[in-house]
Length: 455
Image 1 (spheres, rainbow, N blue to C red):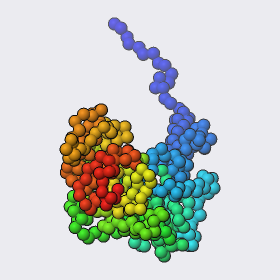
Image 2: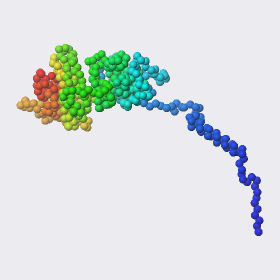
Image 3: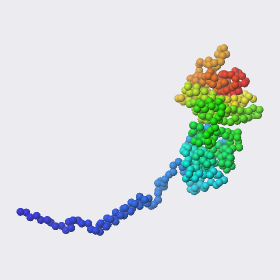
Image 4: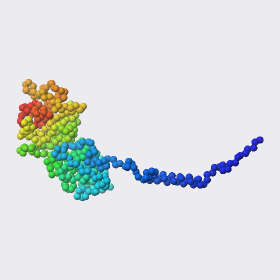
């Protein structure tokens, strides 16, 4: 018989002394306090309470932060509906204050007469792409215009969503990647009465050339009314009257009604250049792009009658696969050019009824250039001296395409007069086409043109 026995060990329940409970509690309280301090924005261990330079918040798309207030940081070329004359260089924009110079002082009443709309009642400016913070862009106050001497023409003054501007006397600054600007009479809306506004840009705003709430209109420069540009003014456009304008509207063609220049060609005070039913035709036209000699898409100032012919030509070119045309100009107040110099007769260019065609590109980008590819051995006469498209042999496929285009313009009576590079040396690099009042003429040389056909 076995007797069970239990060995007794002192403090076998391993009881924890009271002092140890207190120590653990104090430690937990310390952890909670430290964690709460970090979560509420206190300094992290080892930070010393300061952020490292690399930890600072960066402001994106801030022109002053990037030093791009004058557009120098942009690599995109400036676009414009109408090219700036060579005699009118763009003026450089003044540099913005240095970053450490403190906040820009509020403009005084004599530099910014526009009344800023209170921020708590004004609607935020609409998105405007490259116009943001620049002349022509929306604004509630001058603070929304990020350049020196800014003025905000407000909604209360009749400018929907506001318009950034600045006082001017003749020229205005331009910024890369934005529409060109123009100095016009703003009367009592700005100090000095003259202010900078945006020119129309149909590349950025295909439906009308301007941002919402504005329309494109031809106006003269401040105190130089003979210098005209298409600019963005507040309000809806005035619908032009006349059957020719209406035909263009029915075709859905973009154009801006213009004004008759009534100018004099240099050296000929007895002659007057006049463009009735004037307008600026805006490419692309019927799906065909039109560019100037600098390969830029710009508006083409002309008579409405010529615009209808250009539309008809564009329709024909599109059908034969041409996607782009380069021209050397439409309106030009000058006399007729020939090999010995200008004559005393007014050119059809001076009436806005002529255009010079220099090159074409098809849908695959293949070029057909009158300087590079025209075949001077071609003819429009047969053995019986009859005018027509008689040539069948060409020195290149490109020459054949150019010959066919010239022939088709004549056969379809798109223009009244078609002059080829065979006409004379002054026309060696283009087709001259116009709307001379008499006949339907296709010419090989100048001896075949009657004197009444200006070109």
